[in-house]
Length: 202
Length: 109
Image (cartoon, rainbow over all chains, first blue to last red; front, side, top):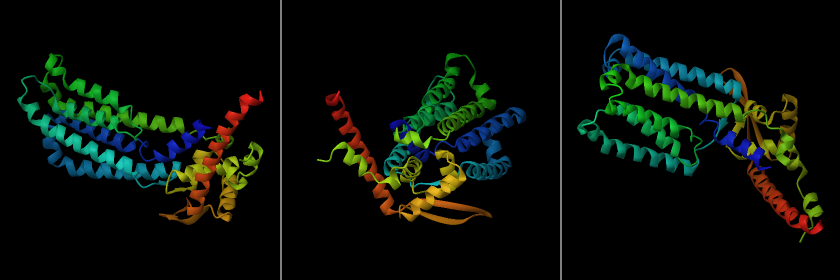
């Protein structure tokens, strides 16, 4: 009884959180920026604040809207106010993240070991997202840890910080975000196969 | 105290029918959902889902709102206050029934 009922409830409650395309598209954006940085040999920050920023933003908005429209036509619409428990944990997540970045940000610059802050921050976001109670994102935990770990590679002389600064600072988080989006989607599709209504009783 | 058979007989047949129970369970987990989503998660056919929704609407358990999303027709379904209460009570009754059956089982063997 529990399995089918819980599956129906899980799908309905997490419908918006397991669509995968918002974080997946952020991943595509990051990978594109990293690739652009490799091609033009300009730091992505300059590209982002230059002509590329409005263009990528418009492309991203249209892509997200198109994906949302397609998704809603195919899988339907569910309207659900955010549960208070989730809202509280999301606020805690944002607060913890900003505190950590504020505390850790200056340390990134002053630490004598070389590391890549973008990857460490990206990994931290995913890791904290994976810890959020009531959210279906446990798979973000290992991906976040792996991403943060990659950010420490220069400290162990496996890669140089310069290699990261020329593209990989954006490409690596982009791949991690894409991976999160793909797994979100796979979980959703795995849970989706029509619930046999009779099993709700069993 | 009611015996098992009485408790089973007391279950609301409109709610207890498997497909309708699935629909109500989905709707109890959200504010409203559209026809397409209900089709996807319950695995019912268009006709079956329509029939069950009509019955549930007739019993005052769900509210059906037909509108448009852009140029496409969209049917949104939500639980009424009564429907939300009914499904909550139904799950409570089923839980009690399960506990009662669990206690009765070993003694009868």
